Amino acid sequence: MSEIFKGIDTIRYEGPQSKNPLAFKFYDAEKIVMGKPMKAYLPFAMAWWHNLGAAGTDMFGRDTADKSFGAEKGTMAHARAKVDAGFEFMQKLGIEYFCFHDVDLVPEADDINETNARLDEISDYILEKMNKTGIKCLWGTANMFSNPRFMNGAGSTNSADVYCFAAAQIKKALELTVKLGGKGYVFWGGREGYETLLNTDVKFEQENIARLMHLAVDYGRKIGFTGDFYIEPKPKEPMKHQYDFDAATAIGFLRQYGLDKDFKMNIEANHATLAGHTFQHELRISAINGMLGSIDANQGDYLLGWDTDEFPFDVYEATMCMYEVLKAGGLTGGFNFDAKSRRPSNTYEDMFESYILGMDTFALGLIKAAEIIEDGRIDGFIAQKYSSFNEGIGAKIVAGEATLEELADYAHNLKNTTEPCSGKQERLQGVLNSILFK
Ligand code: XUL
Ligand code: CO
Image (tube, rainbow, N blue to C red; front, side, top):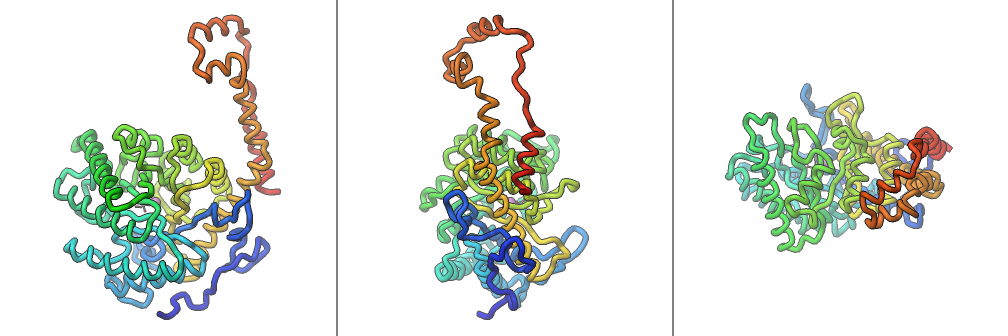
């Protein structure tokens, strides 16, 4: 097999002063941060679909990048060339994981048996490469949104036949995930939602999605999948109302249908902002519910209301993300760059520079988040803010030992001028800036 990314060597750490576009400025895999090497906190993953598949086509124009990797597109030779390209790419960047949809790996045939035979063939080849390189699978999933049969949904479809197609794809994608040792299995409900209630039975659709998830869990556990299932919340696009709107909605759904023991969240930064939340909010809601599993690391554009899937470069967001991750004790999953280079960034070099940007941004976020925690002023302020609950009546409330009458009696002895204390937002924002830019 010949080299695909000729002229691009292994990407090395050169430090923030480096002007070499093909070097890391902040991601220094072995550097110790809060007691562990950076790479232990940042299990980065390559998204098969964007990096090896997406070539720039948008609603207004065709491909700008050449991702044929020397083979004819739509063939098994091309599927193998993508594996070659992907593994060379990950090795050169020091990326240890990848994520995939079934149909990212091979061209889909008209007959599902033929598609599955192709998936068997390509996964043998991927496994060979994994064994040679030590690269691992973070998660797998089934694409249940592109094929026209899923136009009315997969788990939420009106057609029992389509529902069975979805089941068949999940079954195969789970088998592939187990074969490749994937840590997780993702459900992103792209078409699980609706445009209008004039034609939709929401209750029935949600119950049917839950039934499909239960079947997936049962089968996954039966074939030895010990990892986490993930829901990846997103509020809209392609559907107007998506059932897994945000983390809180998805967690409520999982609890309602008894799926919460097997599932966690895969939080995508840009999906959070589309839901009108910050990325940090979604991470916190997942973490406090014990459901922070994995992260799709990208960012959106605040001026655009759609899923732009950009490589992350916003250091504030990455810092607050890593603050949440550190506070939660790390991720059981990883950081999948569900991101694509911009359409005019159409060279092989751009593919590498995109990942360098993303990895450096999260490395910088990690360094800065560790500094925030070590500095202690923000955590200290929060602890102080709630300190009235540490003793006296406050402690009794927290211990669940107070009655409403008792609290009312206590309040009757207070002055109406009682104030809860300043929130000090501007001071704390200043602290954040002083740590980020020192
Ligand atoms: C779509 C999206 C998907 C999921 C996997 O917005 O993020 O790529 O990550 O299906
Ligand atoms: Co995603």
